Image 1 (cartoon, rainbow over the protein chains, first blue to last red):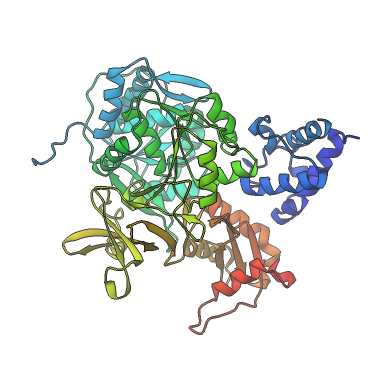
Image 2: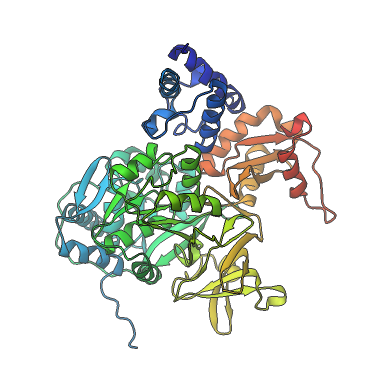
Length: 88
Length: 506
């Protein structure tokens, strides 16, 4: 069974929720294609924590060798990277 | 030895010699395009012309650009015109940049053409009327270079809430570059990484060590700084230089596999403590290279001590790699109790890399720059230990200064801004969390009554402070532990962050 990308975007957003609440932002403030690091929502360490949490929850590891670095900084890119990892 | 004659600015000369030798060689690779020494020189000369046409009065010219062609042409052009550059990072709040422009008495800002609107907005806010010159493709001129004494001025966090300017002379940089040319032995075939912002003096290593060697500078795009593995391989980088945090992230991404980067010849780290186990992993990933841990404050120009990793037996203290020994021309003291030389104490630095002092700030210069036995030293405020071999180990700061991902931060400055924007009676900022000896960010305690304004306070901080100084979290409580001397007990506050017990601590 593989989760589809739409579901995965929701998983990424759920993982982001506590951080958004801290910053006084809503889900609507964060577009699917917006860079989470360049917009200041997360720093690179916090992003790695988020990814690590998702890897554990989904029981899969991303292949950072193969992923374009810019892809892991957006909700959309992360969801597709996880979809790819789950399908592999 | 005869007195050194000031030829043209030596930093420009480093570049010019390589340019004359191989004008068609690649000098710079940025935003997906390579620029030869010839092409970069022409752009630099156009900037130099623009700077001279403006008839700049003071020693400094602002540079509003960020790791782009305009930034590098700007550095070279300003130096060619006999002026020193003051980097103005467009990512910083305009209010802070205007403060810096005022402190440096800037009357001209060279800007990246793509950043023109931001540069004009900044110029309009400069106290003394400032104009903008764009670092674009104009025609180069053959007017000869002018000698300048100062190379650049950087601003570091100041405890009173006002940043401190550190002017660095060309001679300071030459002392550094000459040693590194021997130490890292770079040549025209080398490809240097460029990861540091110009506001960070470690960028000067990237630019001028590279160009002095006739090598090519490879600028990492912003979105690849976090995971540079592919960039290193695709572009055949041979000389890597970054903060250890970059290696920490690559390790978390499982990118530091043995043998992963066979092309790297030298990997240097600086700016924050380097965990020994991380250095060993990096060494395994770069089997044909060596790993260097460099150390130095802005006031002593880029770096002034260094240690070559022995991966089989890393020299460490509490898991942190040694910062090694002073460079050959440097003079150091380890000053213990009652000002006596000791094996543990404050590190004092002297020699040709030493800055003259802070810009227009005699009080702070006198406090930090001292004379001992006829020699001048900078008191780093760093507590170090020296072992029997003469190798140094960084232990901690002696004051409220912390480093977050390599950036120097005076916690007092954060506290001052927090109080100013909120009207709070107290504010206590701490570096937290700290992982592998590296601080990840700032968190702060404010009075419970401020809770409702949390978001507004952070926004106001973000308008005044660089992002690495803005607290990642605020904690609201009136229950502040005090030490017997009546100061806030920062250790107890830190313990609360590490072991949150009550909801207020979360």
